[in-house]
Image 1 (cartoon, helix red, strand yellow):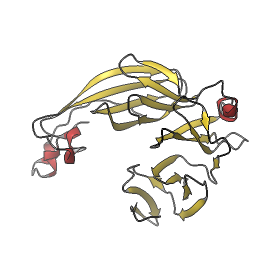
Image 2: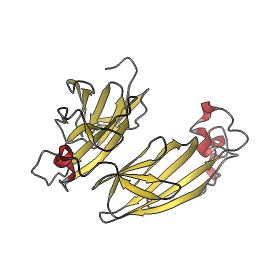
Image 3: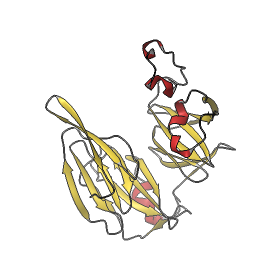
Length: 258
């Protein structure tokens, strides 16, 4: 649903009407691509995924970068569908790169060029140094982070039904071939979400957060919590929630941590 931010100060918010822009979603992601703010809404099953890309049309009130996320729901702004496409597999995540959208799925990472809707696999299947992941159907792509030196750090998680250890993170270059071949992080737990704040990668398991140094792979810290959930992947302030008795608490990992 799309609502105006004016509702936060309105006395009659109970009767406000929103506008449905999508339904039956598995997840969605907000991001910037070529200076355009977009929303990717994904409806995914075990066999296929439908991806709808919405363009955010800025209104007169949205004139400063300080209102980044206010633009999405501002009173003078609107959201319209820009592209729609299908992927013949289950999708797990969406990331916005400089020129393309990267979609994680059970078959790896797919790069989607929005202008042409042409797709290509991020990983080079001819690179024998990637056999440990491209040949494993149980490995699911969960996160990708672009580094300043042109490298990508990508995170995988294995199926709970698999007897193999498929929870890992490693580096690839922009050509899709593996970099730093001797570097491989194997997660202690079975993470379902990740956050990144250089030089640390945060892996969220259901009962703890595993914090690793990206350059060394060393385990820096484990934060134990009940039913821990990642709330965002903002590199400045990472928020997560956990349950304590009958309450749910929200915590923030700031720039001064870990």
